[in-house]
Image 1 (cartoon, one colour):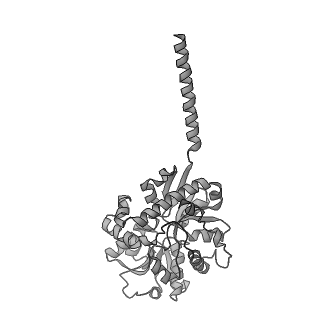
Image 2: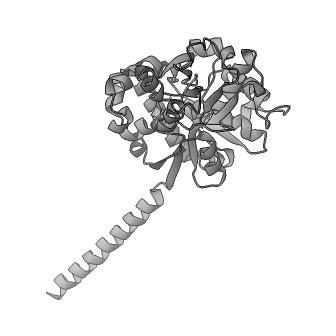
Image 3: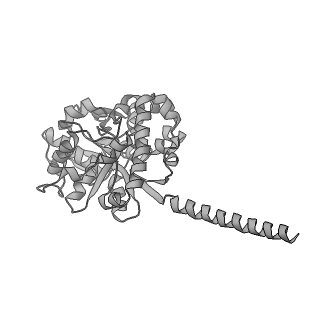
Amino acid sequence: MRFHRNFVRAFSMSALAIAGLLATTSLAGASEKITIMVGGYEKQIYLPAKLTEALGYFKDEGLDVELLNEAAGVDAENQLLAGAVQGVVGFYDHCVDLQAKGKFVQSVVQFSQAPGEVEVVSNKYPDVKSLADLKGKNLGVTGLGSSTNFLTLYMASKAGLSGGDMVTVPAGAGATFIAAMQQDQIQAGMTTEPTISRLVKTGEARVLVDLRTVETTRAALGGTYPAASLYMETAWVDEHKEEVQKLANAFVKTLKFINSHSAAEIAEKMPKDFYVGDKDGYVKALEAGKGMFTADGVMPEDGPKTVLAVLSEFSKNVKGKQIDLSKTYTTEFVKNAQ
């Protein structure tokens, strides 16, 4: 009997010790939480963020990822620099702009090779046939200092307009952008899907310049324009290579999913409120624009130079500065993910 009690006690203590060891091992192996801010995750240009979450690819990599929403990319950038988030899904051009300020961030996964943006014009102004006709007009952008602001100024300049010929107005995206156009606070503006399709479908606006495909982007800007990306502070990347590799693995799998599935199949994975009451319109918009996404997360070779050309003209931070483009992105992780 005494042997039995001793055996039970010894077995129980061994079981507790093993459980404690397993718990310690589990905690040691658990990834720290990674918070990524998305510059408007309902926008189709940033679709890979929510799609990766929906497909379970973060969890497959053993990652604990939280996605936060922020309407303007410039505000998401500020959150990254403040240390509130570890990554941003936003436009690559922030990596160039920030280097001019002495801050080093880099695109670690390049989602797109075209902006996915469109310059729309209110149908209250039927005489506007080209960008040159926007002289004296208020043009909506996501925010002052945002990617849409720089692109708008660059395209207007190519059309012969100077900075004083029009006013760029921060109008956000989605409902705020639509309201600004309905109230005639802006007469034209740069926005993304599904806002574009909503305005066109209701007859409130029409497309003036289309930057949703690689071909139309080359025609308007002179080259491919890498836009949506996952960018992170270089120092954080260097110190967390394992986590960054897992993020790259997850996002590259998503880009391959986008490349190999129909717009309808992709839409089924997205939150239903992203359709804004028009699923067919959402699918059609995605079908027309999903060619903007890279198939492998690799930076297009000629892209950074196009971005630098735009910023060198209209970013006060970049103008006249020497920028080392090789430090604004890395292909290390996405190539390892292949």
